[in-house]
Length: 513
Image (tube, rainbow, N blue to C red; front, side, top):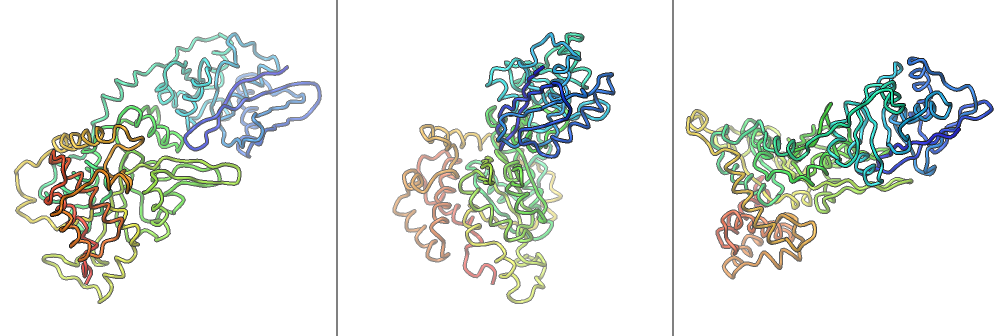
């Protein structure tokens, strides 16, 4: 007898339906067809042990399991549960009151029949709803994540026995319902790190406010202990809150990567990713035999913080150049090509030299001649050109650290950032996929970032003296446009340009001696 149900395979951040067909007939042998990998083929042993644990048996007849479409590779252990249910129905050991073909079923079985959590639940639930299926049977630990999707029954089960009982009508399981909007709005502004706990460093706070307002990339250069990492960790708290579509897209990426915690639901706060400098290029941008998202995709709609930038391998940094421009990662393999979104803010920090004290107001640099330039040359010019703001961080004095004066909170800074972003949203309302100044193309910069004669004179002198590239020219105009938005000005004034130019520290002649 033939039994059929549905599973799913995830490619990139999207899912596609997989039909699981089981036919038990006269003869001998166990055959699994449909381009299954080793993990899927090993399901035979897990399924057999689980069935025996609950008093069922593996048929000793010819059994063919087909995973269709047959030309799509199936990977992972999440097909255990649909295969087990289909075997039981096909062999006549259970009679289903509910239609097995109306559900997508996913879950990894342990040898005692309990279910382990799986990856990629959210895109699977979205695809199941799109296909018009009635419900989604899955491990309890993944249920809250799937329940983000409405108009589909989310059936959480702890074990194979629960899934059998639900399908046969022996037990009743209420579909899990989550109020996505209430959950989203209740937690979207909960950040532990706040700028009100930072004394001094007003110029750095200003630079990060500009970066947040326009979605600009920034690098902080300063000695050890000056507060670079501390300031970077507080940046997500001043960014505009995620919108619901952004939160869904971010959650999909984290779901596919298996980065959501147990019983997790929607990612309601902007991600902050800070990989170690020993990371590989594949781990940073994504990839592998079966492509998985990397750190830059996990930072989508949030912040990617690279601490001690020159310590990263050159090859790792260079692979970021294209994603920084295109805001996506394209990964091609022989059988597939996938795209991962990568619209992130790059915030980097670095010491000015190996010892950390070049240009320090009090401590002396002990690096040998030429060492500083060699250290800075680890970061290529093309990558630096893609970083809009170069900010010098100086140590905080004792008087500033010990001050009891209350600093401005992240919430207050966020208000100004959101006002500037609203101006940008109105400016780009007719443009597709453009909603911040940092995303403007060179053509849009020429159209939108117009400056007067006084501004042109100032910028010309800065370009000649600093030897800036054409891309740096565009970056200055974008940053000055953001500064004008923060000031509530429709025009870019000379003072806005002057402030933007000062954020090109690493372009100055003889900066490194």
